[in-house]
Length: 349
Image 1 (tube, rainbow, N blue to C red):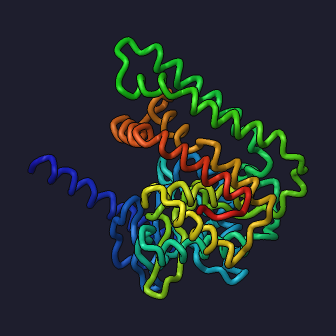
Image 2: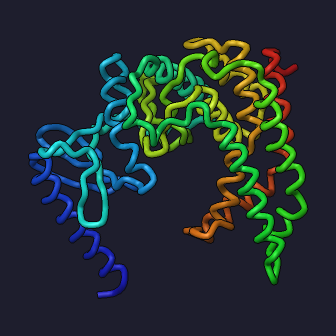
């Protein structure tokens, strides 16, 4: 038996082990357990379920996610997975050194955001998610997921990350293309961070007047947005979700979506217009969205995934950063224009 046969046998043994563990922990009779992306689709006479290994950084937020999804379902928003506790009441279910969660299986296929109808449905679905979460009763136990009021700290940390990446690029004995790119382009990256920090400092609006906090998915790209034939939108993979102002999610959604369609301003306006049909943006919301668009959060994360001390999947991380680097100036120029008209409320000509 070759290497591929060994891998198949190990995978089969793992699935059998998980199947028995699910039946014991949740009282389900599992008829099949099929890998789908980074999860397993669990079939049972009681219905369909999703079994996922919980990322380490999300384990502290499981209580928040369980309470939040229950709140959303209670509000009539059953478009996020519902987490199920074990017979012992555990939402984060330990198996050896790993932690798993079991949630409901949501229908739909990956949302093709390059289709305008799907994009507009996703934007309206995001607005509905945000509105449904308003009024969620935060508790001290939810603290690991709360990012409300922490923008200044995040931007300062972004500046530190950029400087650390730049130091490592400059110290490389044999600079790679990415090292040279970062050394050459770090001034405009630093300039965007500085502009976002200055804008936040000059915003003469107390945090208490920012409006309601909402449930932010915080990882909005097409694979985490599902759409069915009726254009109903569901959101999955909540590991990075936080409680914050909706501008966080909107900026992330626009960035990820517009990269797929070539940074077209007319589509950016269409996306925001679709969102505003469900929940209009106030002038202050536009100012905050402007600041989130200026802050190069995604680029900084990709740089750190390459230069950080715990970098994993190095080849993949490098490819992602190189892609962002290659289109960095175009993206930065576009986001500056987009941020300007978002703040003013005027669509592009």
